[in-house]
Length: 126
Ligand SMILES: [Zn+2]
Image (cartoon, rainbow, N blue to C red; front, side, top):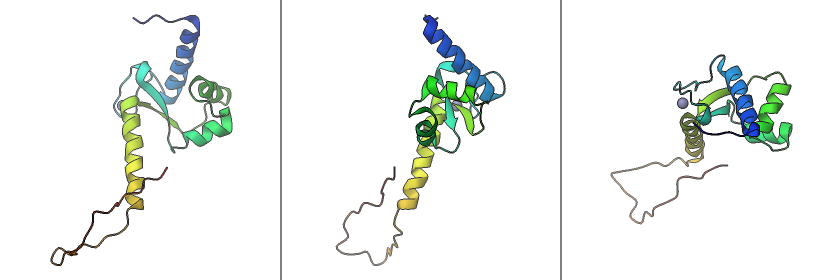
């Protein structure tokens, strides 16, 4: 059992409350069912976390953002994911962005370009 000070206990309590609210019951990851509060995270469904933090909490995340949600009646647009599923979702989104940036290339395997050079097909977008 980890030891918590008063402050981090309050923070953890707030996190539990937020996660419970967005889980619609005991906090758990919507993808895999993981329920360890320490690795549960709030996912901005539309992937606009940075923008919302700038707009609503002066760029602050974590506890400040949890307070914002509570004070605003738990607005829609969030879901609970564990760290692993959150990372997977972020990577999938990046991969989609990468695919959109890829230039169309036509391959003619019968007549390869004689002076072909390796080219960068991927341009990562922010
Ligand atoms: Zn998960």
